[in-house]
Image (cartoon, rainbow, N blue to C red; front, side, top):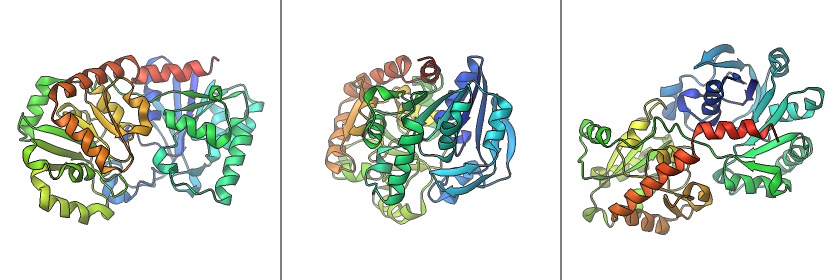
Length: 388
């Protein structure tokens, strides 16, 4: 089967859903294309956070092969950074490829509107998946522009029975149902996965990695990965337990580059609590698994991305906001309130002080990943969606 993914931005160096699904589809024998723009996502403070890994944000349009995936990078115009970008020549390439199945990422993108509107003239099957997050929409104000876009999305995309809709989290599913007045049966929940062959517990490697970074074997390492920013505020982990640090044998391991708006705050905390903090630069997806393996707990106090699923696969108990309840379905971690120090402190102390609980939740995490949260399962569910 010829499969085309259409997405505003594609940066395989950082991972993300579309890259891993495409790889699994190639393993299954499909011919896979990704049509995207000649820009990377406009990450906040791009130069300090992801430029060391990705390079310049904008580049010349080009075609390239990425691990067997045919990547077509088209000129992107009329960009609304992070939300919409016009892919010049999209339909010309779709017609040339003659796909059997198109997966359009994002319910309110220009590309999704176009593909949904003209689908009646073609035989390919169309699936639209939503990448909306709770932190993006928690305080979203409904201005005229938002209302118009939501109306067009409902009219052109989500009300057409021939178009299948997928959500990546339960919160995301309920957001689509509520925002666009859909029924539960209109949206299929297909959780993201992890590379379970790479993100997995390894006691011997854990020991050697700690020796490499000169970390005591007895330390309870609390891992945070991702952008180190005011919005995500990973130092809330230290703030939550700062009065307990003298009696706790912990280390907060931060993997990511520090955003400009957070640097002074970070320096302030590091001067006070530097003995409990290790910060390392952002790592490419091909190397990040080592930091999960050497850790004991994974925590995202405000916003959690796919990193939490990699932590689950690595056999770690996780601490994430309760909105992501489906990621805690195997008694494999603790849910906390959004941006709440009290529930964060309680969750941290519970796991830090109870080794057997950490181990049991870690075992549950690994079982969860092997059974459900893996990219093979995710890819198969997207394929099956076209058969219903």
